[in-house]
Amino acid sequence: MTSLLEGAKKLVTRGTDIGARIEALESATRAARGRLDDTLLDEVETVADRAAGRLRLSAEHTVVGIAGATGSGKSSTFNALTGLELSAVGVRRPTTSWATACVWGSHGADELLDWLGIPPRHQTTRDSMLDSRREDTAMEGVVLLDLPDHDSTEVSHHLEVDRLVQLVDMLVWVLDPQKYADAAIHDRYLAPLQSHEDVMVVVLNHIDTVPEDRRQAMVDDVRRLLDADGLSRVPVIAISARAGIGLDDLRREVSERVRAKKATRTRLEADLRGAAERLDAASGDARTRTLSEDRVRALDDSLADAAGVPTVVDAVQRSTRLRAGRATGWPVVSWLSGLKPDPLKRLHLDLGDAGRELTGRARSSMPSATPVQRARVDTEVRSLADDVSQGLARPWAEAVRRASTSRLDDLHDRLDLALSQTDLGVERLPVWAGLVRVLQWLLVLAAAAGLVWTVLLVVSGTLGDEATPKVAGVALPLVLLIGGVLLGILLALVCRFLVAATARRRAAVADRRLRSAVHEVSQELVVRPVAAELEAYTAVRTGLATALR
Image (cartoon, rainbow, N blue to C red; front, side, top):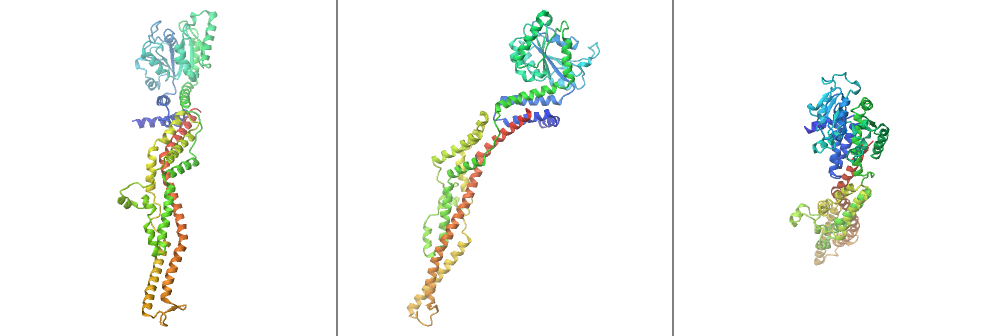
């Protein structure tokens, strides 16, 4: 059901300027959740929902609320405008406990009155049987509300006033000559609504009780107070609901605004702008920003250093030298290198799953990060957050810092795991090293065969006989013996240069893969959380720019 209502709301508001502002404000509110004060966001969300609700309802009717204090003549003014005795009139005690509505032109107003929360028994149609006069066409489309007294001792009364003041399209404030400077109405209602001055009218009632030579001075004093409240564009109309003074001026002011069909739009725009300005003030107006590649690279470098990537890269290079050197060295002595521990096996980084089963370890045996390295990581993370949040309003700066350090405790374990699971590409020997190993063993076999043959010839005394095969005048057994040894040693020496180059190349590959793994960890635990906060801030600024345009 909720999704259907949301869909209906978007369908109604889509394609209109106000609808776009509502959607933008809602988007900004969603993006600010968890970053800015929830109370403020709830208020802004309520304004957006209320504006969307009003936009769906009758655009042919303008809701005009008449508000005032006890004894101000608010209900008398309502009765005078309607020409009907609909509201009870009191002098001292508040007599209006529910809002009373009078509608000029009832078509399409039922849903609007229901949205306003006006009970049917408090609704009257101006051209109903209660009206003996011809319908006043100048007020066609007006929904006139007589609100409860805002200074009532009954809590429910001023709560109802507060509720309806937020819903009506236009407000008529009725002041009494004796209490027009009362701080209760100025501080609680008029001054806070200065952004809504284009949908307000102030009426100074009971003007007939004021001597004629003092009336203009009193109107000027009301004007001065309104200017001090920031309501310089709000008109002041002096009337006497009882004597009929100024009623035509008031009716004309209301009817002209209704005919212009701007009151509802102006009120919604004022509501949305006021809510957006409050959110804007809390969010700040700093420029949007993203994490720079240089800053992310610096973070990756510090994490790689703390994770021991240089140590692993060095181990890869030494391990490759050891393994390839053993494979390409002269087999007679190269076995001695097998007595040296493999640097990678000592770190448990090149044994695979079987190695972990044998060692009983799921982690690598990388040395723990030193306090200096950990401090560098912490400093780099916090520096990243400080740099990217510089100039942001405090709530956003704190949100960025929280995001950057929220998983800092997991960082070192995740880095260790990432290194242990990285394929360093050193499990297999290079193809050329395998071929050299085969060749070395063939040379060893040739030398061994030459040695055995030579010994047999020496024992038999036939080493120098003409029957012994020769190569360039040298007995073939000696050629095999000496050539096999010399060529094996020479090949081992030559291969040292190839082994060194291979070790450097594999170390470079391992360095790229390890730093890529570190980059993924930093992205997941630091960069993406921070980027999410920056994206949320951008969404808020974009939404507010539309809502405030």
